[in-house]
Image 1: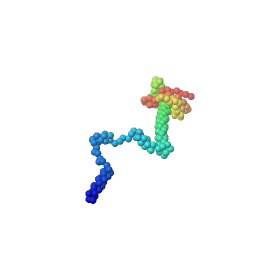
Image 2: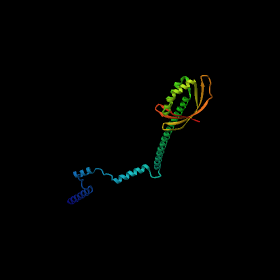
Image 3: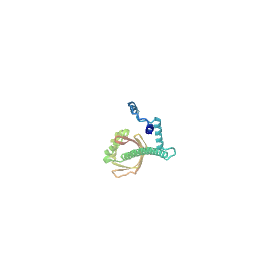
Image 4: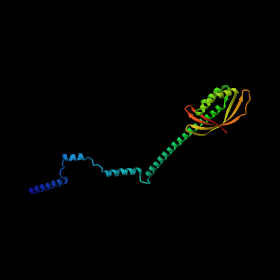
Length: 230
């Protein structure tokens, strides 16, 4: 009996060991140097280019949103607002430039008109007691052919005024430009002239209209031509 019990126990122990061996499986094998080098060379698995493009497209779609979505409408509104700002800025710059040009033209016109008014006064206001200074003022405000011609006749004119002992005073009643272009202008000036002599005799006022050619020079605006008109 003892011998039979001992064999039975040995057989049971062998079956238990076999079952445990099947459950645990073979022991893990150690990695070789070749396997480790393969792992280090390959590194982490890279995402294919197609998957990367799909991911970026997905992100872009999420940012802008599909057509008709609130994000898409916001993008269109931003583009439209930017275009409106650009148009407004360009229009404002153009209007500012036009306003500056108009201001410069008005300033130039005023200079010509003022010079024409002063020239008319100089030509019609002559006092025999200061005839030389009055004539020199006319010469200084003239240019071109008019300056040359008046300078030649200046002394005979002075002698005539002194001999008559006359005083003439001009008053500008109207002045304006007929044209203005490239540093030149043509003005019409209306004046009333009163002449008196040293004896106290005063002539009736006379109305004159003069067409004056004006030129812009380095010394300012000067008269280049004088013509009396009806």
